[in-house]
Length: 380
Ligand SMILES: Cc1cc2nc3c(=O)[nH]c(=O)nc-3n(C[C@H](O)[C@H](O)[C@H](O)COP(=O)(O)OP(=O)(O)OC[C@H]3O[C@@H](n4cnc5c(N)ncnc54)[C@H](O)[C@@H]3O)c2cc1C
Image 1 (cartoon, rainbow, N blue to C red):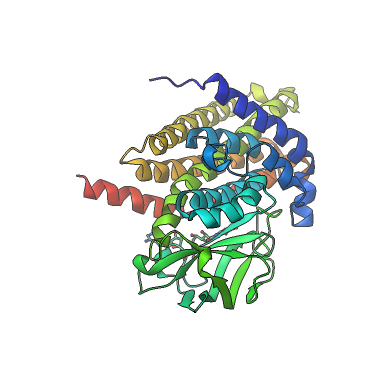
Image 2: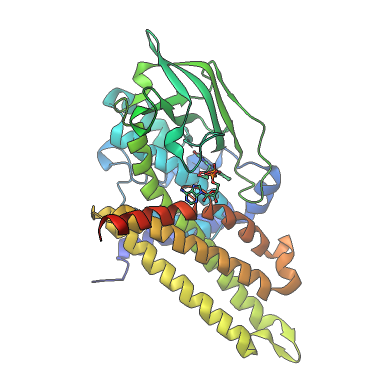
């Protein structure tokens, strides 16, 4: 058993970290105030190969492992978890297309997806179905040319911003087996968007409803086979959960590093606050939590990479453990900054806000426990 990163993995991490510090960190606060990430960032990100991290090399992607991918999201989150997580959603969609779309669809869309000239959103949640995603109601009715979509997707990251939408829609009966995945380009007649959601964190990422009103798409925009869309969507989520966890990990590490430095400078009662043993113990607890989270996440990524039968359970466990630990750590870091932690200038309060949603999306942390417990009961 070898816990060390390879030299290639170290350079992948270093490259992503350097890019994040140079091209994202200096602007993250402004983008949050603007409520959007400038589109011109993405082709720069695409040039690094980050538009198709898990897309096979044959198809022009980076062909990276899941473990490699977590390193990139951890490193980018040290600059801004909201930007990093946004890229993760695009990559989840890119992997779905690479794995399941037929050759003509891939030939048509993949060049833009890889260069990040085509930014993708993932549309599963609806106003009436979140955790119970298989209850989705958006209907895709067969037409002579393809499908007509009617329904609403809720909470879509990149809604109204992205260039195309990977949407899970109902082509058949109730339940998971009646769901298909389709590709809907921005500008398609009948596609519209709700108002921007005003939210606690991830404020640089636009979130909005995606509405389909007799939105006609050609049958060539069906991804894979009819009735398999829910399965594809769930397969995408195993990796997505690792990435969201990696985003919590990187942000928590950045907060802890900043807190350690701050505590060496801040004076109280005649000494620097890092000299109080009660606070040193808190630092130690955070270091222990963070390292446990990192090892656990990388093990789950390795399980997914090696096709382990319990990979889904491990992805769920890691998502729950790492995102809970990340939120706890950034909250403690805010506390250790005292009143300054509450001010935007110190960067910690943004992390508290950004990481909170990681415990909610890509399956809530309650649903992660459902997945783990179901597996335990099945295999006892
Ligand atoms: C900022 C943001 C961005 C998002 N981006 C996207 C996106 O890009 N694409 C997308 O498809 N979705 C996205 N979502 C939606 C997200 O995935 C859902 O909010 C999430 O799955 C929870 O669904 P819900 O909000 O309907 O909560 P509900 O499912 O209504 O859950 C409410 C509460 O009940 C609990 N609960 C539900 N079922 C169970 C159960 N069986 N056992 C125990 N507890 C349970 C939940 O854990 C939660 O605490 C986003 C959400 C947010 C906030």
